[in-house]
Amino acid sequence: MPDAPGTTTDAPGTMPDAPGTTPDAPGTTPDAPGTTSAVPGTTPGTSAATPAVSGASTPAPASAASAPPARTAIPRRLLMCSPSHFDVTYSINPWMEPEKPVDGGLALAQWERLRDLYRELGHTVDIIEPVGGLPDMVFAANGATVIDGRVLGARFRHMERTAEGPVYLSWLREHGFAETHWPEHINEGEGDYLLAGRRLLAGTGFRTDPRSHAEAQEFFGPPVTGLTLVDPRYYHLDTALAVLGDDEIMYYPAAFSPGSRAALREMFPDALLATDEDAAVFGLNAFGDGRHVLLPEAATRLAAALRERGYEPIGLDLSELLKAGGSVKCCTLELRAG
Ligand code: ARG
Image (cartoon, rainbow, N blue to C red; front, side):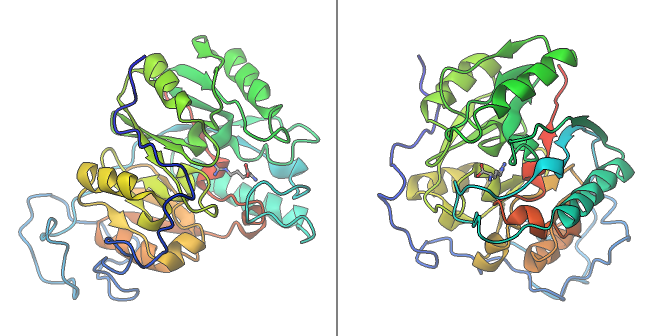
């Protein structure tokens, strides 16, 4: 069985890289809140070849010295699950404190805002019926991984969530996804599998078993690159890294092992790096369609940096879902047609 290229071998916890001590420490991003020149609603640079015009008061990254490129949104098909049974009744990540009350009505309103926004932006949103007793089922990203119409089912690490995998797989089968694979190894769907261009970034360290990466490689095709997470607050790849467009990502370096950071630097030298503050408000749990980036509204620095790069950040308040360690991306599973 071929190894997933770039798979790192260090287990979480063996590399205590404290935030701030990493070579690519947050704070190296050139933007500060409030200093961007782009105004929401204005059209970003119309041509990548536009000569550099002064306007940005801050220095541009060395590799992107001219006006930001025009960004184009690509309509997606998404699957979401209403939080009507959402609650925090157990704790399987450091964000979950069952003794803290959850406002169910507010959770629903916040989730509906996200769903409506996707539709307003031109995306298609399918809805899967929530199941009682599965309070985390709202986090649709974990339900499967769908690439080129092929479905890799999710097999959860914690028994509190194991029943979700078959529910999502049945829904996908019933909705025309015939090529499905029930996994041998634990993987938590798009929580740990993120497609960037034609490269599948694959998280491990807390949830997804690294052996799943080879299984995904055999099933899907696009090259799989393993990335090891080391900070328990960022237990899924989609809490520490977001895909913005085909080949552009943003991530929080301190969430990754040194080897994985090196791989990310090499693959994405121009990536947007998140600060401690933006990561801590779940700013990386974002959905990008190529132009719009939906992200937690508290990630203000990240939003400013995205605007400088020609993206249109849209902040959302998903405070209730954050009590379970989830936000925008966690609520969103992308259904990529064949
Ligand atoms: N409470 C859920 C868990 O710990 C949150 C899942 C968030 N989903 C995600 N794609 N990161 O599994």
